[in-house]
Image (tube, rainbow, N blue to C red; front, side, top):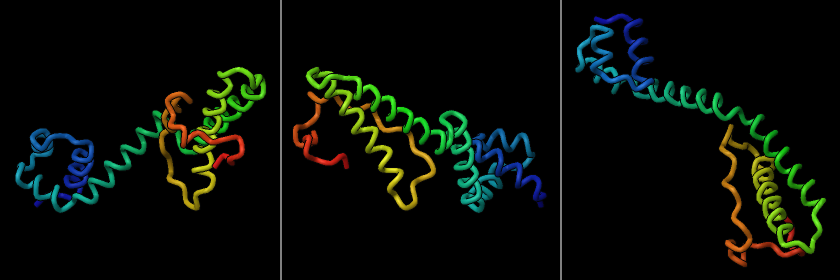
Length: 144
């Protein structure tokens, strides 16, 4: 019979995807027993793996609040740039498209009743020439 401490150590190691062979050597437990534990404890191991992934994601990318602050700051920079542009230049259209994309990203999270904890920022917007004409809003259409 193995101790709870041994099983806990197994859960920690397996959640970090350590191979059975190495866990067996480290804990002194046979590989068939480890495989049986993995089946029995699969939900616990998966939850711990998810927690590890979330911790790494937050360390690398920041939390949702940080992401939202970056999105608002990005939108504000685009808005300021758009305000400085003269409308006769075609490059203004590109800035406007970026503003629309940034606004959509913000609206998505601000208008959802229960937004996800965190998602990566949306991809870089396409240039207006690469967008389908039906997807380019006219001046009369709202930014929704």
